[in-house]
Image (tube, rainbow, N blue to C red; front, top):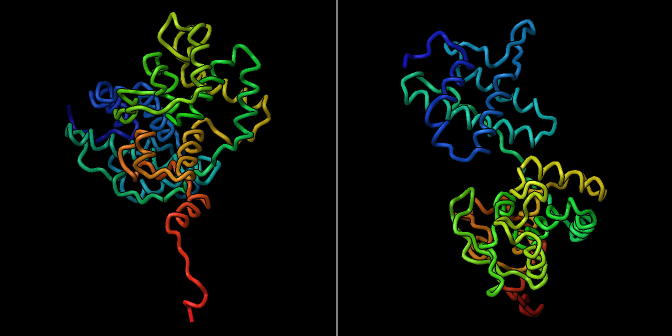
Length: 317
């Protein structure tokens, strides 16, 4: 392979998409799709130059790409998304990906430097949205009232209790649920490759799962698409979830991914330690857990109760 000297940003990205680092090292198909999407959004982003002349990022010559221009691209990415915090998250992730792209191409001696690695990024405000009990009730009532939505309802019901990633619940099999010991286990979590040693299951959820097995026990998946008898795709889950949300007239800011944060925050509110929550969630470290736990007054009260602080007024005199 020859050094990319006369090419542009799009040429470099297309080269990367053909490398083993993209085609083979990224085993998760969802991640590949996300990388491809972010990089194409990057290439299609418009920069305004002198005299208000516009230029697509993909057409920028490699020779002309410096840190200052990369920084301008970053802010253009931020502004391409309507919400401020969402724009920052989108831009940060895109820069993370394109930095990796340039590093891979440098490894193959196709590029000489990586200006993307010096881009200064903003810190997005953490997402703190959680579901309230009445939200879950409204959602599940609607989902269970229509046969074609029932399995999405059960998927959400499982996750309201277990607080796992939707990816793991949609791909869960009957072997992950031990009805005798009343626990959910998973040897390999899809994202982190860690394991869930065992989360207790409530009697009510076990009854629902036993009923589900009577209908779907002839195949492996616990909450399959009822028409295809295979796991729902992420896109299909998202579309159906939004339809149920709209019918139930629930707030639009609530998202499926917020259920995990809700469950883990609720555990913290009830006094669970970080280590106990990590045994539940499968996080590798406290740092990776923190974005999923919203600090609350409940936790401050728990801390105060544990401190059990008391001092009579006359002790201050």
